[in-house]
Length: 400
Image (cartoon, rainbow, N blue to C red; front, top):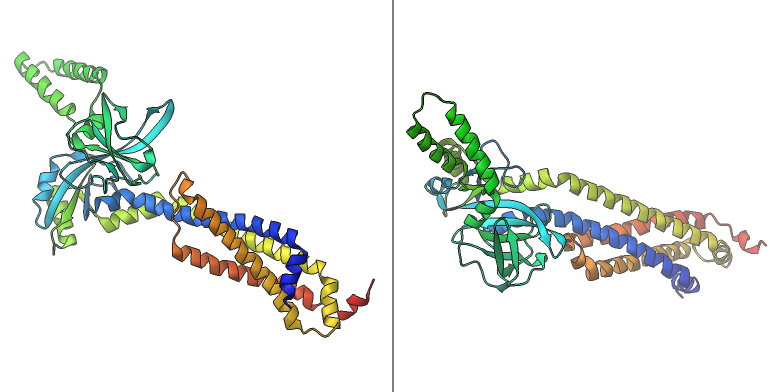
């Protein structure tokens, strides 16, 4: 006869309600672990999809994600000429928020060379960008339809394809356009700003009395051409040739080109240890607090359940039941409660994790570790009830 099962059946309603409540709490713990992993996955999504060995950014910055970085587009040719570099491509990044269907619409725009690195990792519907202008590939998470048009800057862009769930480090879904389009959207000034800049340049040149009018006119055109140029990018990514030494290539780029070459490993460290570390720590702390709360709840439930069974336990002792029978009954109840609650929490997350606004990554290692933690919590928590039960005297069964 299994005493634990019989007692659970006798208090069936209380056991079910308690287990379901505990299962919801464990489901929250599982979700916290998934969000924790999701933060890392989101932070590295663009970097991993680019598959670059080196990120060349503005000197003295940790760009292009953690800090702002701007470098000339033609640096790509100098980087490509460095011994050991097989391929180099410029990339442009910017976060955009516009109105779509009357609601704020936010996404991460990536501009890439159509024949280079950094484009959509895969096309799951439609096609890739073929024209140099006004075509876009959107991440699935943006929920855009193929053929849909969206206004960016001065022009309308048509969605021609959909890619996987690529997001920025902040969790904004990505969209891809050609590099020329991205540069125009990011760096092209509006007509009023251009007129104001030209007027300011003209006024400054007019103050120089020593310049003849013809030279002033030439300077105006040249300065305007420089200040209105959009041939700027946020980074140039490079892929090394087989057998090339990463450190040697980085040293050459830094010494002769005067830009900062960041390896993929360094970029990973910047993204995970700098940009999202505090958020990860906060989620980890919240997860630990929930586990402590779960252990307190289980301890309290087992203790109150033991108090309710004082006379039954005393009767068992009176008829000669050994302590190990009572210990096993309480421990078994605690373990059953924890394991069923874990199953409820796991099933709940399995059914809902894809509906979260941010990515939730459920890793087998995390789930297995949490399972062992739940077993340990249930075992330790049962000691409170066991200690109380072992102190019960058989004579209590004969009392009123």
